[in-house]
Image 1 (tube, rainbow, N blue to C red):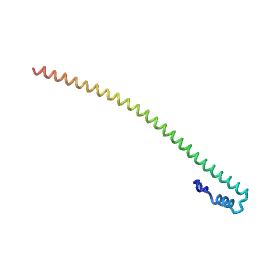
Image 2: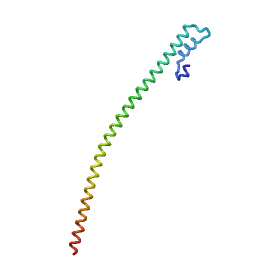
Image 3: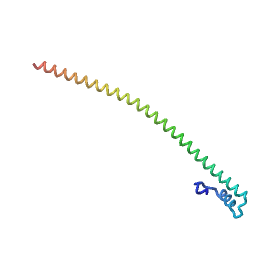
Image 4: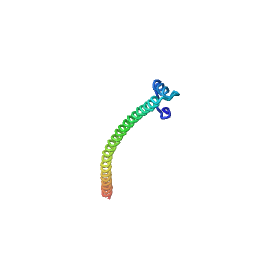
Length: 110
């Protein structure tokens, strides 16, 4: 039963359980065996609960890191937007300067 639940027993624990299952099935040993099995299950559940708590803490840290990453990404996105607008204005300025240069060149050549 214990192995089916995925639990392991120390040799002393196994000996205790085996003694409780000897042919005469004294009521004390049956109750003691059930109680001991319950304790083993309790210990296993406690280990699983600890693992669950650690997993939740790791998940919380991961979520916090994702939030910080999103905030940094947002800051960089706004910087990129400003840089794009500056490049667009510079391009318009260059187009205007080119048009003026062409007009001046045409006026001089006449």
